[in-house]
Length: 376
Image (tube, rainbow, N blue to C red; front, side, top):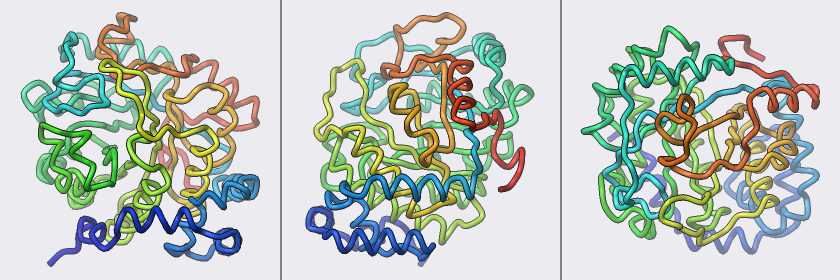
């Protein structure tokens, strides 16, 4: 029988991993740092050590190694992308999301004309890499709707990514054939026992189906797979451990695809959900550096959920891609309103302002996907 990450996940106990992280020693951190510096593959114990409270005393070392590994693989470059929200219809009831079906908000799916209006506004900003985003509603933003949207926009962009409802392998294959380059799907939390607390209804409540989404993407032959956890729901350190395990599994079994990870923190939204486990800037930085030391080839994105100061500080320390000028509601670029947004933007700088900061730090902004330019 074909191995699955779900089977892999069942081999670990969430609370046991939490205890191991909490009790990691300074010596184990030193060993993990040494292994990372020498490009030795990190063990479970190494990952646990780098995510531990003990590692918080070694952040400068982690940052230095993260910078070196990132520059060695990606150079001094930051890839730019922007989300295009096509629809906010959703049949799920996620407790933390402004698009949740239980929230009384105005719903909208963009028409062809409205999609092209958004495209024109986005192209004026200079973007070549676009991320299509929808709520999870087969009726309003199903495969046919997505195929039509891809066909509409592909003459205008060098790279098309999507953050959409999980699909079956055959449906992903259709989208890939139409021109889709990458799909980002976040497990939100790897805590199987608590998953339904945050996803009480809708297709998203099926933990195993969502967990297997990257595997279906790999089977469909997608160019790039993006994953991550939503920080604030559960213990960020344990989430980081399972994200590393997930990445390791996918690379082993779907080595033809490239990989990207992101660490979104919960932002204010309709519904007023408050994070159960708030994550500080210092903790988020540690998580990013731990995953960079774990894998120097993975792309790491930092979105406009984070404030400008934090993004500026992290720009040269492990990040490879950023968005700017983002809107999180359908029609937000052409109409400039915030009545339908999924979550509140934290960094409102324009692309020009972000590029200025990138250049100020002696980095270069890439407007297309990495392999459209070069392989470092």
